[in-house]
Image (cartoon, rainbow, N blue to C red; front, side, top):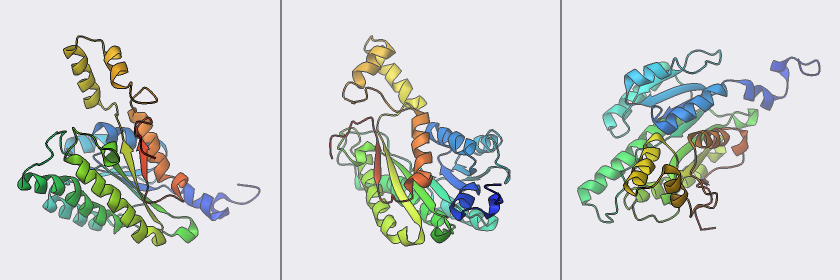
Length: 279
C-alpha cells in the first residue's frame, strides 16, 4: 500500500518500474558480459544470455538470483555467422520473447597497427564486428513492444571503445567498425525514438578485464617492473590515473538501461577516466 492505494494501482510510471524487465546480453560469458549480467540480475532483470559457449551459458543461468518471473534463459549465437543469427531469430520467435533492453557487445578485431588490410580482411572485419551484430540487433528490436505513454521504454546499449572517438594507432581497423556503430546508434535514435526505443553507445577506455589485466602484468614483467609501477606508468595520461573496473562498466550499463536515460538517445558515453581530449 502507498498512502492507502494498492501498489498495482499507484502511479503508472512507478508500477512499470516494478515490472521485471527482460534484457538480452550478448557476449554474456566474457569478462564484461559476466559483470553486466551479475549487476542486472541483482537489480531484478530477467536475463536472456547469448554467446557461443553452451555449457557456460547453461551454468550461468543457474548462478544468478531470479526475480520471481522465472529462470534466466539462454540462446546460443555466433554473431559472425549469418546462419547462427537466423537460428537465433527463429528461437526468439518460437519462445515469443519480448525484449525491454539489449546490451550488445560486437566482436572486435584484435589490435593491429596495419592501416591498410586486404580487401578480404576488411570484409571479414566488417562482417564480424558490424554487419553480423547489426543483423542480430535488428532481430532484437523486432521483439520490442515499447509503450512510452504508459512508462514502458526500451533501451539499447552498444558497448564500443574510445577508438570510436579518438584515433589510436594500434586499433587501426577496429576503430572503423566502432565509428560505424556511433553513426548507426545516431541513425537508430532518430528512427526509433518516436516509438520509445533509446539507442546509446558506451565507449570504453582502458578496462581491467581479466585479459587486459594479464597483459599489464606481462608488460610489467618484460620491463622488470612491479605491476603497480607499470600500472601507474600506463595510466599517467588518464586524468583519473586509473583504468575502469568491470563493476564500473556494469554500473554504467545499468544506468543507460534505467530511467536515467529516459531523455537520452543517440549518444556516445565515454567511460575512459577523462582520457579523451575532444569536447
